[in-house]
Image (cartoon, rainbow, N blue to C red):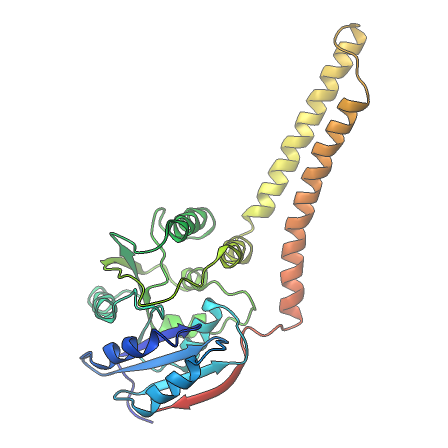
Length: 310
């Protein structure tokens, strides 16, 4: 086995046949003191992504590892697979669309080494995303302000550099619904941020649709915080207090023979309010129980079909 490289580039792939070749060639051309390697994780693409990547492995000018998932498991699952196969002293993960310039990844790595940080996140002065994707990123970071143990307002992006120590600890997670940033913040608070450039996509569209963003938000809430359960308890207490106050007021109107008449409509309205609240709370608790069930039953986080190395 060769010496440990200084830096590993990890790229999750999903229908990346059009964009991955120029990105790999750009990474190969970089000069990294101590050497660098590339780990490609195909996350169930059914186009020619694997074929293109196998050609890149044959042409490799740096060590390249190609991992092929048996099906699509999601970006965060693919990143964890990359962490498990990477050998670098630091690991940086990039999107497969070329929006994160590899030269900026070098800056993240240098900043982490110079400052002695376990993790460095890239943040953008200008983001070349659609308005919908930018809104999703903004909302995700507002949610994480509430549920994760991080500095308030600290921007968490998918463009991050972590030490091998942090990556190894995070890769121990076996649950089927990982959220990388939550796992990192459970390991360390020695984190930093660096402003980086953001480019337009080389081709195609973002794989983060509304369904995937909702899944990410739910993972953020449910996997790393009991705050939703506490909110449910608080809401239940508030509703109970409001109900008691309402009953007291109705009793007062009755004994003083004042107020409007009460009938079926008001009764059904109250029942709908309380029933709706109960259903929301049951759904939330069911989400926790369902994830516990899938974890206990060892639903796979990812399944590797093939591995190719240059």
